[in-house]
Image (tube, rainbow, N blue to C red; front, top):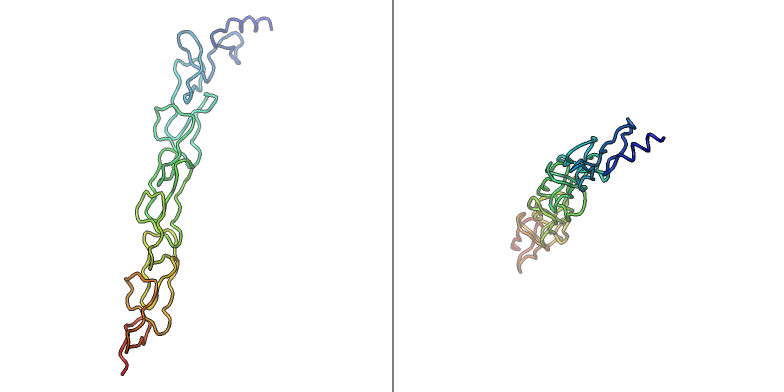
Length: 212
């Protein structure tokens, strides 16, 4: 015990007794030797071995641990693209992006979206029914315009109602009432048409015909 105390008294300037050999002083993990002193690594850097003369940067896809003694993988949905930057945390993906790799973020494809840049995510969100996402990298979804609808998720556009139908809901189309009509399938409409005077709608999907 007296010998250990004597050694410890010699271990100055941040050095400490080697756990494997009580007769030696070492600069432990999490520190480095500079100007004869053993000092803590800067935040975001680390040393995983003793008696090092410089601290390491975490590799791509990793961050330095808070004790500065090692590096660890980025958490799911976060990333770190570079290997020469000090960091104690990995980055969240930007709006319109997701991170399914610890080393990079990826643009959300058309039909999907992702809002905010303070949330870990490994995928993007499908556009909801009644909405669409026309372009990649979007952080919002657009609602279907009046007279069009979308009854599926993850779509890049909304649908025109079919001939004989109309869309007064953003998520579905409705059959024209008897006596009204809608003859085309590439026009947005929220209602079907009444036939002109002197004509009638023989079919909801055909134009009106004259009485004979």
